[in-house]
Length: 491
Image (cartoon, rainbow, N blue to C red; front, side):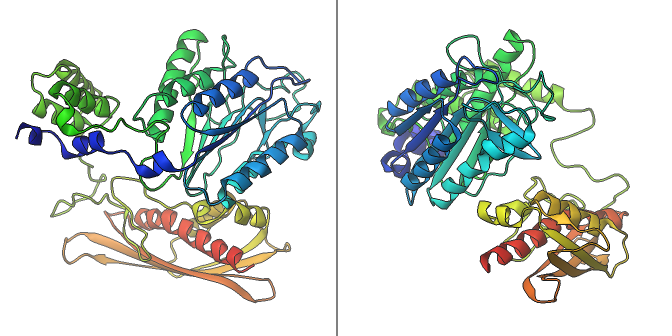
């Protein structure tokens, strides 16, 4: 049958849409603050109302709050968290207005307060992390937080605020945090009824069959293009995602029997599914199926552009490190990359699959350990220098913990040993290095609170120290994440 020529994945997409994304209840809370005494904004209230209308039209239950003071914002967020409890759909929080960072924390500014300095922001604004805490604790299936909150710096005249824009944030498991512009930069309030980001997000969420991730990708592309053209600088939205499970949609794909789809419709669906891809194999596959297709010339152009952009002498395959020789080709393992790890932690040689320390921890756990002072004691049996300690210090800082300097008081003590061994892999005939680390987290008086052990290995060239460093860059994330995860669960 002719239909068998087409990719099974494509036919499946034409036949089915995920029931969970169709049947589950979807909720959204919109807060749009425009009437600030520190600098009014034209469009946040419009953005909140218009986006709510767009989502309401596709089945969301929406709540809109405009020009809210701090207490009203907090109450709305708490009530929204209650509504999301144990839901199996999408929970979406959207804020448009002034947002700032102070000491690495992001704050959403309410109306009705002058905000003259950083201290007043910390005391009277709403922490963005409050939204994440309530949404994470709800156990809702998918949580989206959209912050169109860097319209401009309201403190620019007084210079009372040191940092522009918002700071990066970690998305809890099952969540996505979207920023209207990159960390540390400002977003356009737009020249029409809506802000630049809200305008493009609203347009893309109405397109049937786009996954949530695709909606944000297309929004970024539209914002970047229009901002460069209209205001002369690129506004580049960002997302931090920890979404999991099957694809979710604002508007699911149209369910259609494969037998009802014409060849032209199938070809169009195929092209639409790869048109934004950066993988040359997608376009080669299209040309194999449709050598004389409607989009063949575009596919050839994309392949030609990809080859032109590739540096001379490089191929798509990973190249060996300088000075490294190997009697056999190891297709999926880069030199110095972790190739084995217990406890279901796997790392791919072609992708950075490192599990970050913060990903082990809930928002409430990160709040509990923030600014804890930790004394760090590391015994390096391999005598490879100070790099192990430095990596641990960096991971501690990434989860909000402070390393106590010598001679000062500490709240907790982290103590451990790291041992490395090197040799030749008998199967591959190339050098490898193995690492074993055992650590405990304890009170200063000596009571052990949690413990963690990790091991891993990497293939090496001549630089064994660099290979050991690469292993530890990944394994230190696991050590710190496990120690504090278990510490928080036992509190």
